[in-house]
Length: 310
Length: 310
Ligand SMILES: Nc1nc2c(ncn2[C@@H]2O[C@H](COP(=O)(O)OP(=O)(O)O)[C@@H](O)[C@H]2O)c(=O)[nH]1
Ligand SMILES: Nc1nc2c(ncn2[C@@H]2O[C@H](COP(=O)(O)OP(=O)(O)O)[C@@H](O)[C@H]2O)c(=O)[nH]1
Ligand SMILES: [Mn+2]
Ligand SMILES: [Mn+2]
Image (cartoon, rainbow over all chains, first blue to last red; front, side):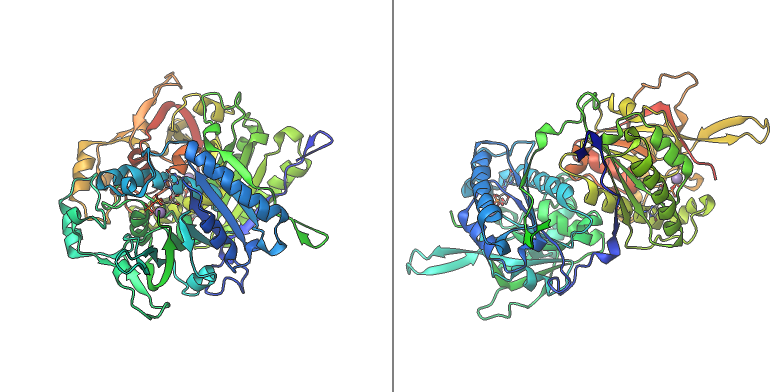
């Protein structure tokens, strides 16, 4: 920025927002993708899967938000090692356009990141509020005027089709979410099997609406807890053997493990409410907020991505 | 980005968000300021006032969002002319760190920008929803991980103290708003006089809360209209001759003509709701949303900035 002691400001940059398309053919239109990952733990399988995405890496920017605790330090070091390998010495086609790592300025509310502790019902509000703030912070500071799409991808998503971006974008939807499953070994048959993992993608129910109406202003509805039966229609249970992966359903709530959003939706103001918004928070609240802004959510019950199994 | 045909990605950038301070001494801490201006019309007086701000320009980035219509084209040309003068041939100390001009991808809802038309009560909801989207779009695409403060400054604010940034920041508040007045010539005395301009900075009232409670979910409360008497306490009427410019009051709603916000508040997710949020939109809704995120708003009744008089 300085040459012979003088500060030479960069030329003014002009952006015409209507030239920033987010179309069914992002590759043909050379649209830029921002992949955002809140990351508490680093999994090698996540990175390997990311590397295999066939969307041109030179059109992809990666953004990470990592807690500033001991586990976060370890995750940062492991991530940085992979990044260095890819960006410095890896083949040209593997290299991403740019990578931003942000370290969080607040502590995660839970001491433990293990699955049982994370999923306790009484921990959800504080945990998901913190997750929302991490997501917002990452989003607000990395979205640029020339970003076409934002792909939210959790750090424990370890398997997706390599054409994930093209496949999701082809639907040309404002917000689109695949079905998030988990592989496991069936203890009875000892055979590999799979089960639904993410219950945040749903269609609303009268029961849930009634429950919401009777709640206090700061109460939240949670999905996937027997103690709070909402009778919503869950995308998790709507996949069919041999079902068309392109089948679309309308959704009222979305999960964020893998989630493709047109940048325009976020630019309009859609964020992840850390406070109860129509009694919803985080990604579920995001879908509701987007709806208030005029944008709908779509789910793909038969298009699967896989979550790590601890 | 390319040298001898090879793409060399920039090195990964690390940000420690807790090192990004927004303190009472921004100058001492070399904190960066992002000045954001939604701009429908260009006023030379706005630019001249901006140029006189004594906060080091090299720590200031300017961001503009301009409609893509005929008036917007004219405004862009006039703005660009001033920018070129400053950034290319002006004295080094006048030059800003960087400048971004974004052209809006949706049309303003009103055909006319004249004051009478703008302020008609029935035009408020659509007009302020569009303003919210313009503000959000500008905010989401320009806020960076190293921004400390965001100063919202309307394009028709033509007079402020030259120490505006230092003065406001010195209060060390999450959200702080000066009192926005307008100079005019008193038709009776023919003498120069001033009157309150912005009625969006207020303390809530029981009446307003009762009105909100009886409203439909999509209705909004508006301030400054006789047909909707809210009995809120308006900062506009709280200035006193010779009053202490440092006097603080707590606010529930804020105006956005000049408004200093710690970047952290926006990063948490505080945006300008284009939809009724607790029956509030735009800057008033912003204050309410910030409150839901745990951040309070402060007003300075005796610290004045001045709005253009058409
Ligand atoms: N930055 C940040 N990321 C987090 C935090 N907690 C979890 N994550 C990440 O956020 C995503 C979702 O969290 P996770 O615990 O996997 O949620 P679950 O799968 O619903 O139990 C994953 O990518 C985590 O690595 C946190 O406190 N801060
Ligand atoms: N980008 C954009 N800016 C606008 C639009 N309408 C007004 N503005 C700007 O937004 C700010 C507030 O609008 P203004 O009409 O002055 O509001 P008022 O003073 O409350 O009547 C000013 O800086 C305007 O130049 C719009 O449709 N798009
Ligand atoms: Mn997970
Ligand atoms: Mn104005």
